[in-house]
Image (cartoon, rainbow, N blue to C red; front, side, top):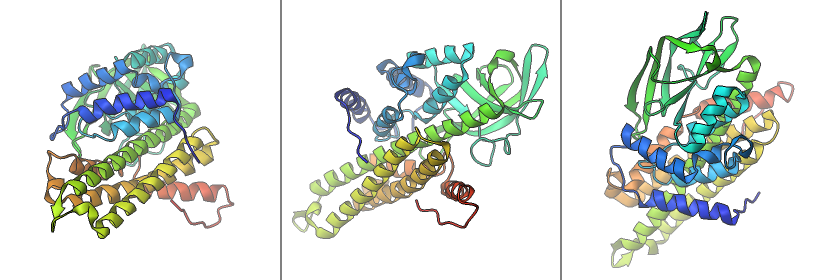
Length: 378
């Protein structure tokens, strides 16, 4: 499988890379204010608009374009905003068709909307079996009560997509302003300094128009949005691996030992070759997932989960070896390699960990093979 970039894609990639590579490392991560400013800057560049299809006022919406940007942003995890939430949110809003969803899409394209997906309540990605947040019908809308945990971008979002159980026990998906009375966001940082938030909803009053999807349609859209966000996360990890290899090669060429550059030692060359093969295999898995997003749901789920398993394992191995080859400097917060390793460790758990995606692949294959035992291959 081969993907060739168009001249326009190459030009856009180079522009994003210049911005990301020229930014100064933020050892303690981005503050909420600096995150909002950087997101606005990327929004003006058209990054957010790439997540929205042209028919809805965006610039693309194609998964390959979203992945292209995510790979560049993954090269500098301390200064580039996470785009996974925007990609998933844009997909959800695009499938809604309500007036509020269209308005949110317009704001997203303009760079004024910074969305977050608030699905998780403690046992993995959203679904009816884990949604405990309740939506109670009132005269002029709904009242939401519940808690969402580890919402990526929740500390900086001005739009929350919240799942809740409707009075008839169907799933509902609400577009909510986080400044609404009754919403409390407790922000904290993950190991890679990513800002996340636990979102507590206490009798939050929302209008009826805030319900943008419901029932089986909501479940199907949520699952596909989850896969879009997972693919985007994997693309970011691939970009981080490639940056890690570049930094390692540069360091080995510069550092001398026994009168020779470290890059001349065959054992270290073999290490770099292994890292390159792991990254290349991960990139191929990413391309397979991108292609599968346009196919049947079963193929999509199997390919995306396989991609997450492969990329997560490769990212930890590649960035971990990079830290090892750098020695002490690789552990410092002023140098990018250590941040890339921490991002790889955190990303393995976001949007479903390895165990979740292994079970998902096995379940999909059994469901479509008469429940016969099978071996999941990443």
